[in-house]
Image 1 (cartoon, rainbow, N blue to C red):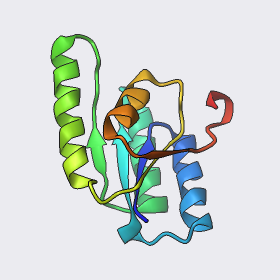
Image 2 (cartoon, rainbow, N blue to C red):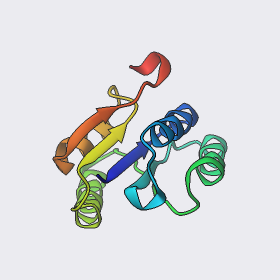
Image 3 (cartoon, rainbow, N blue to C red):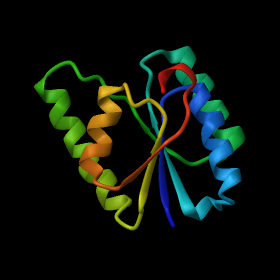
Length: 121
């Protein structure tokens, strides 16, 4: 089975690490999609954690949903992700309250696994 793991916070990196270890996933069985928090310090922390704990190569996307143009850019990005992950069966994510993440997982049309994200879930 292949997994797309969406990360949007430092705690989600730790939860993803636990998910990967519990399921004995190799680097070939998952991809990391890191969605920017739009905070440089926080993004740098998350990036370092991903590289140290998970894998050095990951997909990074800054998403600012401010207007119709940004939604069109997000749709183009989702199309790209769909092509790259067509063999993936699951999307793993942490924050069900994030409209951006909900929009992405609904568009990807995969089976969903919700990781615990502390107070967000």
